[in-house]
Image (cartoon, rainbow, N blue to C red; front, side, top):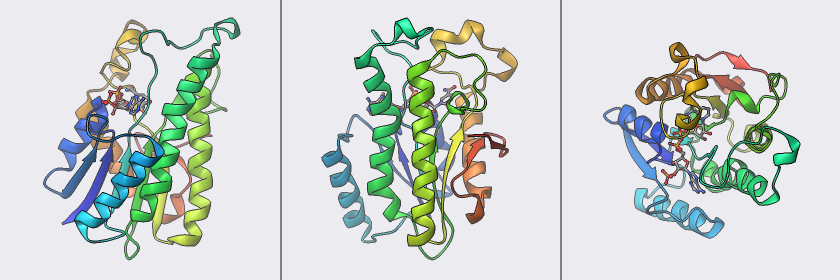
Length: 226
Ligand SMILES: NC(=O)c1ccc[n+]([C@@H]2O[C@H](COP(=O)([O-])OP(=O)(O)OC[C@H]3O[C@@H](n4cnc5c(N)ncnc54)[C@H](OP(=O)(O)O)[C@@H]3O)[C@@H](O)[C@H]2O)c1
């Protein structure tokens, strides 16, 4: 059976992806309750998985869902005057640095003898060209940084693992605690159940081709501008 790794497996979309993959993949899951998402913790988690599976490159599919938009004391900034150094660092740390470390330690675990895919969940609001409304400085810019990390990693992986695909995916606005504080402004016809988002994300990962590596995809498989 093909093997998949879901990083951030207890979040809304992460848990739905785990459920969706069950049966077709042997699913491995990392989440904050059991894994320390520091550099050392991720390195140890990668080594432990390689030993457990007795294979340095076992995964057809790796999806990193880690990200945050708001929490008590940190909420998206409406204007420059709202910027706060600590909050900005937290946005970058969770939305860009942790996924970058996941790329560092887990992308070498992508299969090398058939197409394999590493996807991170980014966001449409991280697209620089799509930014018409402004605001949300920390979330937008940390997801834009994530997008650049993906593009850059894709160039390196084209050299080191020619059958790998590295992509960023916008999951679509999904019902759950991340979006709940903003739900009154969300068009309900475009507010999706986590199960549907999970299915769409996996479809994008399975249908994208090696030449698609380094792209930002919408949940429906269309390419988005950076
Ligand atoms: N929901 C949407 O509409 C939407 C739209 C665009 C993009 N996205 C992106 O899609 C991804 C998943 O969203 P979601 O709705 O599933 O959000 P969620 O339910 O809040 O899940 C977020 C995930 O990130 C993890 N996480 C948060 N802060 C962390 C930290 N400091 N250290 C380590 N892990 C941390 C959470 O771990 P715990 O479970 O342990 O807290 C959880 O696995 C995020 O990257 C988000 O930015 C979502």
